[in-house]
View 1 (cartoon, rainbow, N blue to C red):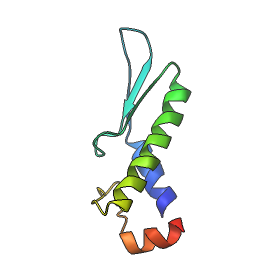
View 2 (cartoon, helix red, strand yellow; view 1 turned 120 degrees about the vertical axis):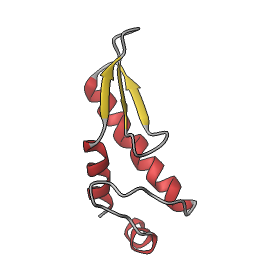
View 3 (cartoon, rainbow, N blue to C red; view 1 turned 90 degrees about the vertical axis):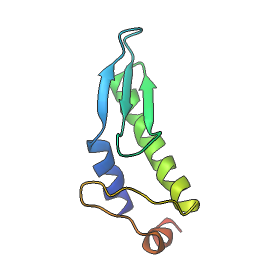
Length: 84
């Protein structure tokens, strides 16, 4: 379930090439503060995946709500068992 949620979130990512330096910028609109910037598209994707995973883990740890993404909703008790 956790992996499905992360993959669904990454599929909603918005990418752009920054005109200032030609680097790649990406964000996941439903997840405030989840963004990445890197020299290559692949590096940007990898960084975004790491940021998204950390964002979810911090929100779960702090018992903050997670947005539903592509019909996937994470609930804390099952997620906490999965992370152990």
